[in-house]
Length: 446
Image 1 (cartoon, rainbow, N blue to C red):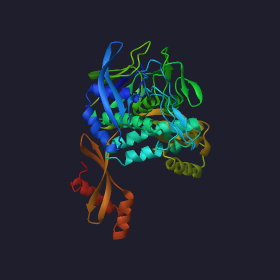
Image 2 (cartoon, one colour):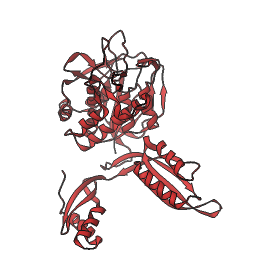
Image 3 (cartoon, one colour):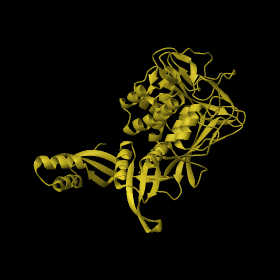
Image 4 (cartoon, one colour):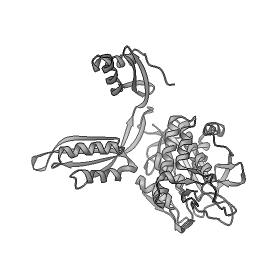
């Protein structure tokens, strides 16, 4: 299986990640061409060879058109005075602004202007772009993690989190660029070494704060990712780096049975005291795995055994859980202690939402406790197409593996509606839709 392993012994920022991807073989021209689909102006990209403690790799920078003298490297303050930055700013209109403490400024900025971008603005910018659906979805998910963390820190809804204009451009380029890079390499499975941050302090809008930075810690806490600290007296993991790791990395741990094919090094701008300021990315094949193009993700599995639940309560809980965004909810008959018939109630959900659904289970069922585990899924790549039948058009969900259709499922409500309109049995419309797929009467989305 195609696997990308991130050796983050010296932390991670968005620009270091992209630097490593360029070092692995992503062409800067390809990255620029994809980012141009966002229609964000007044910046240009720069990649160069650089060394940290004699380790050479690629240094990636975003240069803003109207502030060419500022190298917004999202992690490393290259100036000798070691200027630290506020990562959020209280604006006069009361919004909290995400402006990561990752910019190499040589002066203080006043940020009382109105041309920042809110989280909802950035989300719409991504949605309106000509990027692939996968890049759009993943980039929006990474920004969502940052906005949720900043909103929690400052007691505001995620929709009200604002990104200062300079920080927003940097963040957009780093986050969308990271998603573009992963798509370029075939959407590999992503693994990483254990998380490690430095020690010391950062300056933020609320005074001096210990490392890890508040947003970084919130993002990793929501993911349930363990983190340790080392003796390096600097911030190593930025909020952007944390959000990328939280969204893409399946597991954190040592490299196991990976055959390296390419090795890339992303270089940061600061010279650390105890370790080279680089991230190492290893792209290869995991031993014993196949090279199928299925999708892989990790979800939370929540379970509880009930032998005293009112069936009406359980039905109500299932409705609430699905409405709240659960991936799946099911009830399985179980024989419990004292030979009592019972129910195994199971909820599948995204990892960051596990605690929310644990609380929902405890509040709306008779459960006294909930078991929580993580499960890795292998999923067919899905496409939604429309087939033509004698009764009308029917949307069909297609499941593909290695480019071949393995599963197809006509959309039930559409089949039901056509059956009622045409006065024919539901199964007749359903079978006609399946036949259209089998006979190849289905448009390609390629």
